[in-house]
Length: 558
Image (tube, rainbow, N blue to C red; front, top):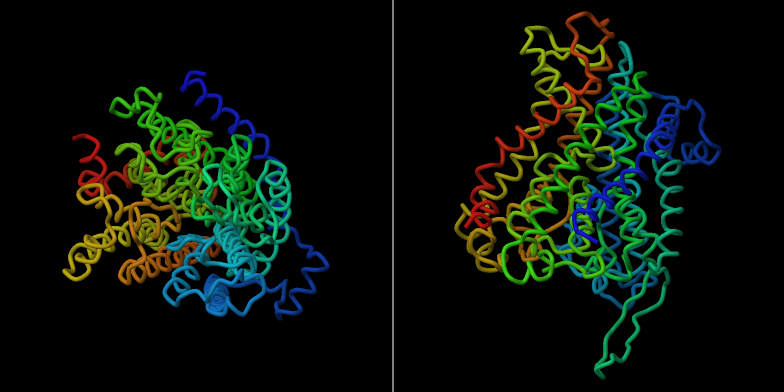
């Protein structure tokens, strides 16, 4: 089959599945977060943790609850790793080192899932299940809770509260993520993904040598890894490993899982604000960016320079033969336009310009469709900026969904947009500006010197700041500097934007709704969709073009 025909069919297949799920799943999630009734086991859980489910929280109280919950998650996950040797199903593996335990705890609590270790050689089954999988669920639920809190800010009138964090967390986990992950795990299991508690097996190869094969409860972790846009692989090869992703069928399922909730949340947004057209506009903007990114990456990989790529029908280095260029490009686009970080190929082995696309996807803020929850609130921030710019052009006070966007709202939105680029650029600059650090980065971490090495470092900080977790495989991030710097970057990149979003939600909720007038910018039409897409592209271009010019563009245009 011709590559571009395959690319079109692959994109259409995923689009049809997502379109079919968009309405029912989006409506269901809107019901989950607006229903006044608690399930029986939820009421019991609230009594155990001492939460009044009917008690609403201000944005400050909501933020304090979220930060406290996340801090406890970091401490518990760190502790599990440090006492691993004493736990059942440890597989005889020793306690995880303090350095790796620190980074991993932060990584999984922030929904980044950055792994600077070989999972099957480092973590036993108990830590994988009780530590990593639990955080895969709750970190995704935290992201959805923040998105819903912001939507309530638009939907409510003169309200001092934005909801209850504990209720949103419990409902997102048990009513949305857990049922979907259970179904997904069964589907993956049927597709050949392994699920067991077997120890390592030593087998004799065809050539007469020996090889150690790991087992593990993989299907259950794989399901929430993709569904919650987490990305931490059970094996070091991640979704390129045949035990995690055996073939084309499971590859399609995993791509759909990556995009399922993020592309359905705009419907939830539209239902909760009482205007479904607003949700369609946000989803359309996400779709336009996604398609453009996929087409560009596929083109770069199919037309890689050199005799070998031309004979192979595309740049096949770093790609699994069972997936090829098209399905690898679609997976890479999906995983870096969400905050997932899972990979079914090695981004470091892409062509120079092809490798730039996953990097650029993260630099846009991962809003097309973005991570579970984080994509929606990120795109709504962009929409606020787009409305503000539209208001400037026509000389009117900007309004979005009946809420006036004054100085406070625009400052919060602007700070949100600035945070992650600042973390990326400052982290990269410090890595090369401080002599001892530079010596470590250049001499130890970078395996491919020159402009490609710069791209590897930029990619690492971009992935950490945007809580993605994917990496250019050629970078050794296990040094003291990168361990500490990336850990801090993940924390700030996750929680500073969240606090800004919650502050914005509180500011919007406190306002009354202004009636639409003849001068109100319609925010459900193609013109607004184009304006939102333009803001995403222009902000990313103005912020990151210089560093891209020094890295992948310089390498690709030589």
